[in-house]
Image (tube, rainbow, N blue to C red; front, top):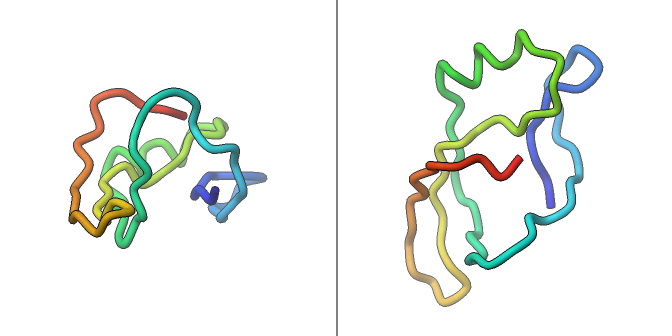
Length: 72
């Protein structure tokens, strides 16, 4: 699985393990970067950026994600 993270002072796409636990696979078609993501760039932390996400489920159902708890 790919994620956008700050690494070695730069923003880059990295491979990360998939999240554990129950859930649904969302095939992401778009992800936004908002003001809170830009503030997180000042931190030296491996946080995943881009929490505003839309896509579709495996059966084609369109979906927008309302993130209430970070998965890391």
